[in-house]
Image (cartoon, rainbow over all chains, first blue to last red; front, side, top):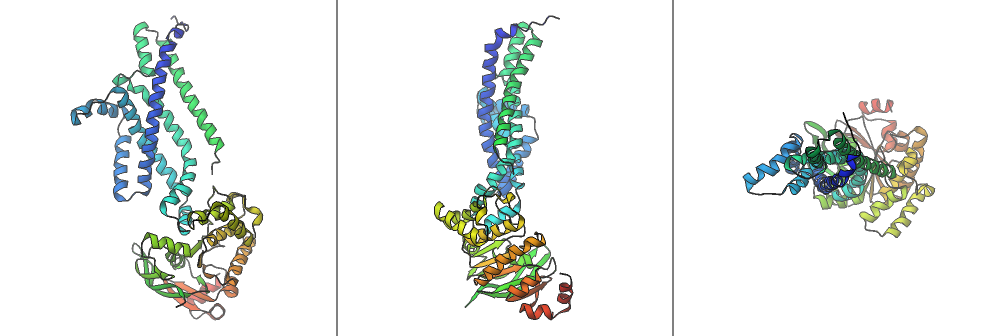
Length: 218
Length: 242
């Protein structure tokens, strides 16, 4: 067995480029996913029968199917069904938005429901309209409880980008695969790829811990 | 017409459970009505119907001439006329004592930030907590929290105050400080409806006592009379146990 760690240096630019694409998909995807999730979660918590059911169906479909199937569906089935063809990069971002959206929705719903009903009543009892109760009272409290599970979802979504290898997006895992195909340096390359992921997820974890610490958790 | 709260044949059902049954009741300005009764008799529900935290099933309920069935806008107006104090205080935990009080003034009454702060400080002093303005609810004792909650309700300048077992979650020695604030309010001619088990408060401060049973008003009279001579057996039995 010969393992030569020094060869990694030659491939660092390539790996960095892959990591950049991974990060790009993650960040844009999560911005969309968290926005969508917040909306769907509020629909679940406050919506009437119709909105609630609609949101519920969405969450169940996404949670109930593997993300690979969702990606395949977006990339290969959608063009056939409705004649919309989207490039791999857009597909990847869209898949993160839709997938993270469902999980974030449940996180938001849970956080909102965990806030004591008495506080909502106290807000309503002083004559606040419902939206002000949500924005000024329940919202800020729910937000604090949201941070830990939301951080978890960010890490999951970041790692999920690795499976966009199936539609040929040149993210980090795909980059590793390509390098591997040329020189068969499995140990060195996959170790390097893993370390790159660890650095990204580790940074995210650290960031979250700082946010959590700075916020008083009530 | 001096009635500020009028129950007209009000019923409230939770599914098959009849919590209030055909209640007729008029409460006049300046009255201090004490509601007592065994648990499940409907006294809290009756109180919560007044500000629409529970919607009545049938009949009509007027607060200062407006029906609780008048829709969201009317309901918000009613809630501004009827302040409520809860058993569990329900102070907003992310806000200081001062902010809790100023919040409603700013967002409901549209008062400016500065004016709201000044008036909130005055209210804190009124309930004897002038030095606690920058404290968060978790830094206050139960009795102090409840006094802040009373100030928060008063900040909206209500015409009626509704108290839902305001001292039930408090240690005996903390009850008095809350009851004293309520006594002071009564002296200022505030109209009050109080669900409580504090019989001495009922006797000293109450102008009217209502004993509820099975969703109906079983006894309605002057506290001194009906506490000393309960007109029915159930009430006599109830009083022996509080």
